[in-house]
Length: 174
Image 1: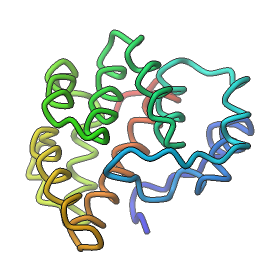
Image 2 (image 1 turned 60 degrees about the horizontal axis):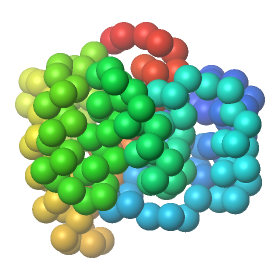
Image 3 (image 1 turned 180 degrees about the horizontal axis):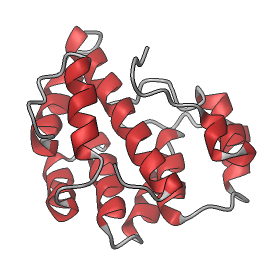
Image 4 (image 1 turned 90 degrees about the horizontal axis):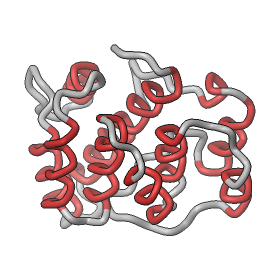
């Protein structure tokens, strides 16, 4: 599904791989609207995971634990936390609140790679990632269930999650 971003959950250790495994191992498309369908075994594993809060916020978000992702992101006062917070509110959906958090995020280090990957998948990202345009795209796409636009938005949202999760888990910049 993803050509250049080769996300492999096992790169982040057995504990993270075990948490992600029952939910698609970090490769299933991300819903545009919050859901609450987290696998019970993944939630159980999250109770004991040893990880930075930026990683925990990403895991909760991927597992569709919206409240936990929101609470964890809310406690992070840095661009990574603001980025997670922006995604959480985009999925709420609360586009205005999402935009607020993306304004705080600023020019995040994953944006250049995200713009390139999104463009490779057919999203008109341009030269620089515009999180506000993506909020609008997600809003428009979620109103057309089953459309090509919805599938594209979910795919780009997965790329976004993978890149930000990798950034947080490795503590690296692009």
